[in-house]
Length: 167
Image 1 (cartoon, rainbow, N blue to C red):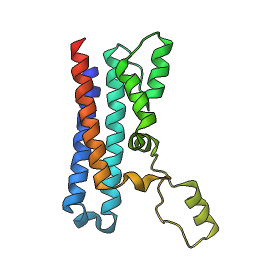
Image 2: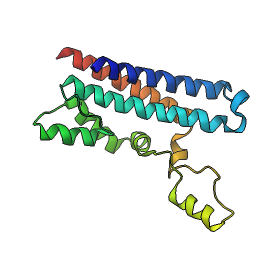
Image 3: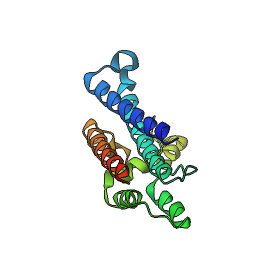
Image 4: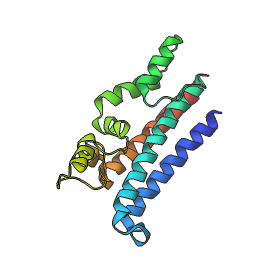
């Protein structure tokens, strides 16, 4: 089963890379017009989230914890600790989730409109986004930031897989 979660992580990294490249080249604009930026950047962001979660699931499966499908490393660490297991790679990811702002933003993004924007639109306020995003979302929705996340995730996943092969 580990190969399929691993393959899914690889696929999502590939699709995130294609979404970023498509945005940069303008490939989405012909069909999506003014929505091209949102489509491309949200797609890349979502695929990066999935790749990260698949990587976590892969790390769990490598330790025969096949039922774990954590959303973040803190959840994985908690579940693994209950089974008296230690997975250094997951502990590393839990630390990174706390210390790297981009990783925290990536995992916190839920693609739902911010509560303030929903309230503003309901009250008839003139100053709100038609299609709102969750708080802080614009900080990570740039091609440069998404490129950084993609590169970091790729390097991290490769390093963890090499470590897993040593066992």
